[in-house]
Amino acid sequence: MKGTKRTVGIVIPVKNEIKRLRTLVPKLKYYFSDVDCKIIIMDGKSTDDTAVLCKIMGCIVPYRVDGFGYGDSLREGLGLAYYTYDCEYIIQMDADHDALVARKFYDIMLTMNKNVDYIIGIESGTRITRRVTNFLIKYFLGLGKYKHPTCGYRLWTARALTFINLRTIHAKWFAIQIEMLQKANKLGLRCHQVPFESRPHRGVTSSPRFIVEWLLTFFRLFRIRVWWILRRTLALLIGVFIAPQEVLEVLRKSFKRIYSLYLSKVKPQRS
Image 1 (tube, rainbow, N blue to C red):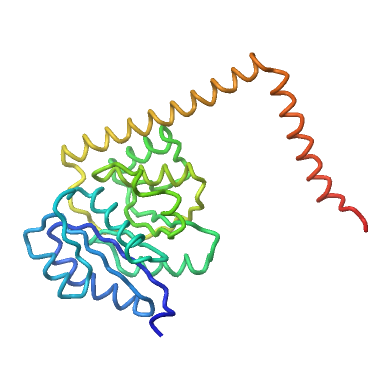
Image 2: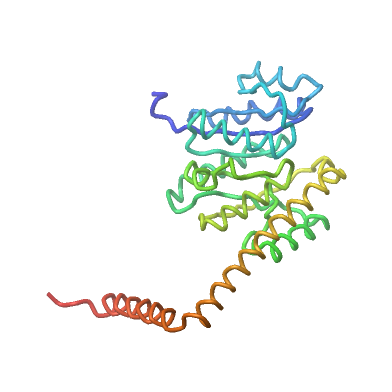
């Protein structure tokens, strides 16, 4: 029965992608025929009848009046899947991505059950721009555990989006990938990374507008990270030099509790 099916949302921000969507959408419907699949097309002012075609193919194409950047489209699409359609799993992807990878992500998520909150792809390829971008993000924003932090192919659980809170995400263009990942990492959400073969991308990310917005978002997130480190350091120094006795007492109690828990596991009490 349809009512027993899982609800999966697939969010695709697009602009003038009628050729790719003509083959992508039927494949997605085929691969997700066993679930209640909501394909949400976030159209960014296409001039090639992308929205019309997608409506004919049964996709959800919301009417939009502003906010046509990639970040705006993705945030609004994820919000629709999560808040409006109550999807258990939400996949974000691009029109040039392989539909079979979306199904692969979904199957992996079901296999891992509740041990993972989100999946991020590791797209093949060694373009110099990607390598430089990944280096900056990993070592300046504290995202070193991610092999491809800017990858746009991801699967989010409803739980993950609940904690992230899309209303707190502000990036308007492609830097939203970084902002959401940093928020998820800071919250301690559990991630699984899955490699997949890439396809040639169009050169949208090299536009001056994208570069400026990416740099602004990078420095904003870097500033937040530095300020957080400074606050923690300052609080520690104040605690050590102004109230050393109180700090030592707290540490003593903490270690005592940890040691007691350790003993209870290593040497369980006999009844």
